[in-house]
Image (tube, rainbow, N blue to C red; front, side, top):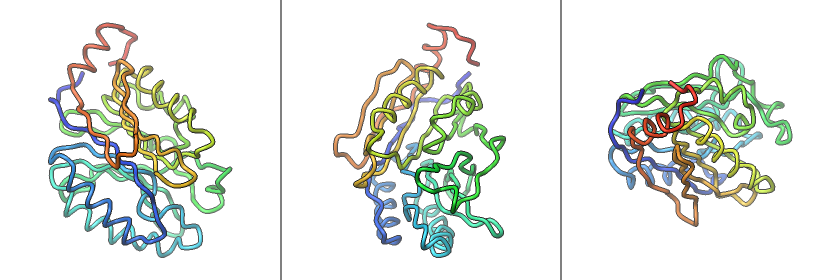
Length: 244
């Protein structure tokens, strides 16, 4: 059962360049321009791209960026992923930041072999995929390719919002739209999907409601809508499929 009130939700869509500092500066600008209590989702590895030849540099930059983002996010919640070193391995880690805290972290469990991710990243354990609670809102995260695995959808059963930070290939554009729409309808929840605006990605960021209504990117850097607890509750009463 949801307990929160209405809250702005924001899906970002912007290009990830090879200039890490430029990417961070642009992300900070978009955060500051967002409503002061928004839930914001940014594209997968938006600070660096996959940067396979610069992993050490990218992981070091993640540490610096986290400090700056924690300072600027204030009362917003920011969800994004970044290249992160843990001991002698590199992971693609999703972070949820609020004020000066890291509320939740979650590693990518399904690595995209067509993009050679498995040759560079270590996959996290599937058991680490679990929702977290933010001010009464139950939030889940699926990172890009994870969207294709139905068992991972089940791990997020009962979420009020599912976020999808992605770098989704342009050739599979309709798959991204269809799967994110279906995720919202199947789970009777909001989905905030954020894809990059690179030459090879879809740029089809979107916000989908529990009833299946959607808005999609049309050149905007930020899509803004609202989460409403009563919409989730209403859908689950209207068509009771056992989601708690």
